[in-house]
Amino acid sequence: MADKTLSAEERAGRAFPVSWDQFHRDCRALTWRLNEAGPFAAIIAITRGGLVPAAIVARELGVRVIDTVGVASYDHTRQGELNVLKAISEDTLKLGSGTGKGLLIVDDLVDTGKTAQLVREMLPDAHFATVYAKPKGRPLVDTFITEVSQDTWIFFPWDTALSFAPPLRDGAA
Ligand SMILES: O=P(O)(O)OC[C@H]1O[C@H](OP(=O)(O)OP(=O)(O)O)[C@H](O)[C@@H]1O
Ligand SMILES: Nc1nc2[nH]cnc2c(=O)[nH]1
Ligand SMILES: [Mg+2]
Image (cartoon, rainbow, N blue to C red; front, side, top):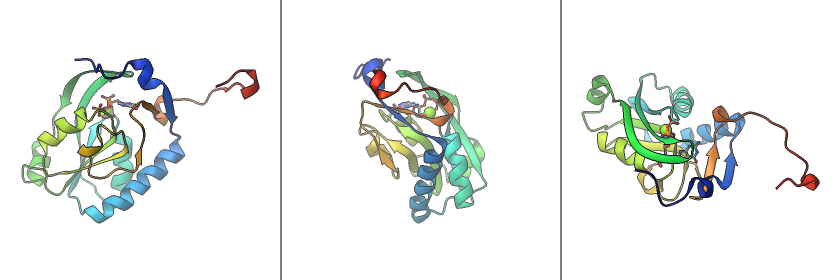
């Protein structure tokens, strides 16, 4: 079902572009916080967006067991139905005693919180971390670094490219 709260235009109205440098710094800051909450036996990345932060967090925390859960719901800025494209492996479920105890789930962001809610139901005792959080999804996250407003659209470095920006006096916003 489409998200009727905000239109695609409203959601993309405020852009928050993130560079690779900034993203790496924010992931490292997240790791500092997670270091207090661990140790973790394994990391589960919510793919695809959770793959890059999970790699950085795993490197910093020295975690070598990485699993993925594939969830997709957005077609650019419009949210549709949640699709689980890949489930968590049996090995990982066993490692977390079936409930996720001692496991870390990583995603790039929470927006409405629907993705987080779904994955939390799979592993209720796991620690849930994201780099960015919007107010609606924030209560579902145990640890995050930066909050952005609900009407902000975050542009990740893997989705963007450097391009010419017209000077202010030529009419740029
Ligand atoms: O809190 P929500 O409103 O559920 O949105 C957050 C989710 O949306 C994005 O994933 P997307 O479904 O776009 O798939 P992707 O990670 O493969 O890009 C993002 O990576 C989060 O997983
Ligand atoms: N890139 C990106 N994907 C999202 N999925 C849900 N919210 C967002 C967002 O703000 N940016
Ligand atoms: Mg995602």
